[in-house]
Length: 93
Image (cartoon, rainbow, N blue to C red):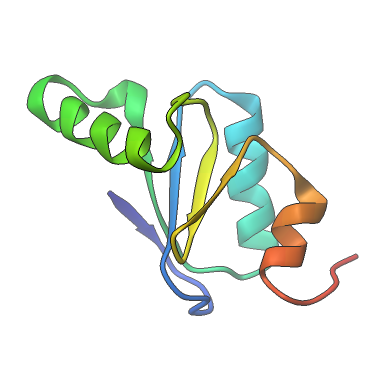
């Protein structure tokens, strides 16, 4: 897991693919909102490390689709700008 610094908004973890445009948009939105989070580009992992991360993802998103944003145990699947802004509790322009 990599860490991106920003405001502490609780436990925020993002499962992504390095080549996914929607994953990149999610990262950019979190940066714009100054949200600190952990992320992992699953497609760059190998072997046991990849298996472990996929098991973690499957526990919160059985479809294992990307991006998967886990905020304090709640999983948001896909890029949904309005929902992400809503989860972090204040309106954004």
